[in-house]
Amino acid sequence: MDMAERTIAIIVAAGGGSRAGGDVPKQFRRVGGRTMVAHAYRAFADHPLVDEVVLVVAPGMADAARLAVGPEVTTVAGGATRRESVAHGLGAATARQATRVLIHDAARPFVPGRVIGAVIDALREHQGALPALPVADTLARGDDVLGDMVPRAGLWRVQTPQAFRLDAILGAHAAWPVDEEATDDAQMVRWVGGSVALVQGDPVLDKVTYPSDFALADARADAAWRTRTATGFDVHRLEDGEELWLGGVLIPHTQGLSGHSDADVALHALTDALLGTVAAGDIGTHFPPSDPRWRGAESGQFLRHAAGLVRTRGGEIEFVDLTIICEAPKIGPHRAAMTARIAELLGLLPEQVSVKATTTERLGFAGRGEGIAAQAAATVRVPA
Ligand code: MG
Image 1 (cartoon, protein in one colour):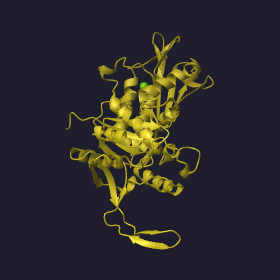
Image 2: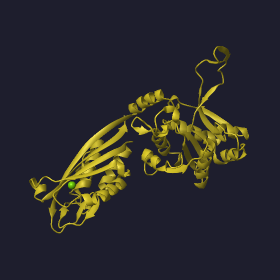
Image 3: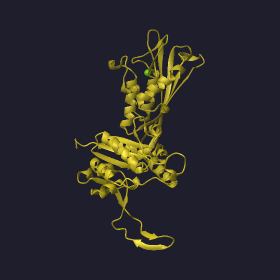
Image 4: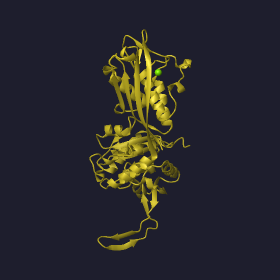
């Protein structure tokens, strides 16, 4: 391992994307149930050689980026041109002590780990590296009528991510004429005398630009993922002298829930729903009530464990929905706090967490105030 190296991926997502049609910039449009930029972000964030990912977005789009990718995303405001946007990304990489950077175009959502590894590896011998594919089609000049054929031997289709030694790309940006836009960072590095390696590209790296490209990208993404939904249900008894923990929040009430752990019936139902999405048994399988370690345990750790199992299997939590069934206390005043706590435990945005409540019209054990029930549903995406 290159212990002295620090590699930062810069995803340039600051463009308007008007060619794709629609009001939303194309990098924030969904393909296969996930935004384009989120696909690229995950590819870099999950790669063992990439230390950090920085997303360059148009000014004012930081919140949109959080919604599109996740609450943990680091964003940098872009500039008026692509070159300026890249420069802002390089500034962020410099501030984070990068030695190597990858510059990637958000219009290419699917990034094979092999390509990321190959361009980084080529930096041992070169100042830059980029993925490229040989041109397969016959090429010709012409306007209305056919002109000369262009020999395609030695011609390449250039893709991203492009990898650079940080000092080389910073030097190239500094030397490049201020009033000239560069279409490609690798050309800037070449222009100051740097050597840029060509590595084997991949057809899945092709840009998603036109409306017809989205249909193909959708089919590609859908083939790679399965959506799974599962439910959970739990009941605990209300007793005197207990604290009432519900949805990860301590609620002042005349009675509390009893059980081996803190008896947070809402988090238990959510935990079972998440475990169900990856067919990993139930909460009792992982945290047996007979085990003294879980006496009085905070139930948030059960939920975090279940979320960790989903992620260990390459899955992503899309949404959770909770219904608390009780006559009292009133849930409404605590809904926002529960939503925030559950989102925090699961690493989700509050928009991905739904908390609801109902009574049973004074019927049954919940209606008589003998206990509280909760039911939950979770939707996740897992690799096909
Ligand atoms: Mg329980």
